[in-house]
Length: 463
View 1 (cartoon, one colour):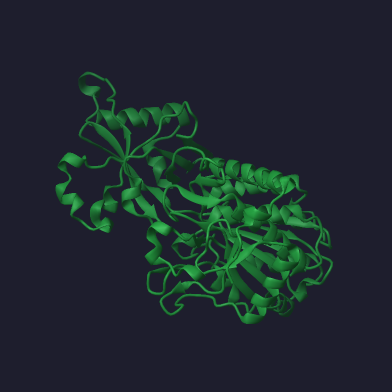
View 2: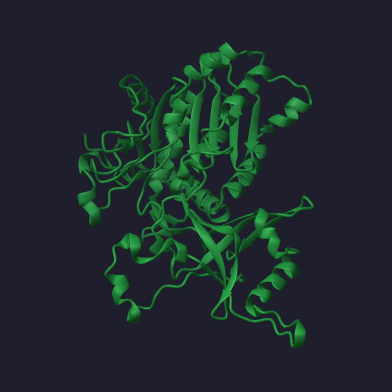
């Protein structure tokens, strides 16, 4: 049952295709560090591949037929791409589903304050993060500020080489005797993850001198550069992320080190697979969704009705409208819930059960179940679907492995799989093994990225 290392089978053409894919992937995750940025970039790629906005189809009162390709966007944070197949939609669709949100720090609505002659931005952490990761490292701010006049200002500070970066201070080792005695979860208080944003006071003499001159300097800079006032933070979505691009990792350049690979490594390979298949028999759908890291909630999360409503719209436009037909289509669908798995880390081997662990470089991972303890909170794929997936992967020559997320009782995690499974469709978790998951910089193996792309493409074409 031991799976081979995928690198062993590659010839020159395979290596060339792998490197092209991974280069494009590194660019994607370097340039798109928020869910909004991922959606914007995905729309651009989709339109270049011939996809059209479903809103335009509806507005033009057009119908849809086999071969048509459409996309739909929800709140600029979730996107759904659909390639209509020759078979009736009522017979089911093949779905790739991944999430494009990642653990980060969100700037609060009333964030700006001055203390000790420095200006700070107060934050609230998003998703499962270890607070101590965020201190003493270069950080960037990405996001949008929506003004009352209806205009939206795009913000990205800290990525260009000429940009300033931001930082959260750490307690110096010389004074940290008490801190070093604390458990890791308590060493850095989440309330102390405040971003240092400035340290220079504005110089105004006389009665006009501000009480908080360093804070005022930032307010003046915001106004001069972006036309923003302090109150505009009230309608802003600003995310703090690690500054800098994804990089090749290892002397042999076999790996990728980058922020947000959970789950953009599966999102990008799913998107690339969807766009690479020109025609299908069963309609193919790729879902890139928001809010998975906090329970898939909200209007842009998987528990919203966006997917269901869009499917209903598409079936209506394809001449297959009706509640019963929609229910039949959903129940007859098949899905790969494309999310990352925990790569086996020999430095923490006691947290894994090795023969059921995801080993870096051995290909696409399939998790029959996730959850924690007694499979709590998990979708558990049935044996029949697992057999079908095995056959598809073997027929397409895709290297894959089966795995669990660590030892029983060591922890656990979940995905969007159980949400789609509620429709009665077949769903299994699949994805890429990741080291240092939820850290600021996560590591993947290029071979696993490549095999994921091949596996997702095979599923679209053959399921």
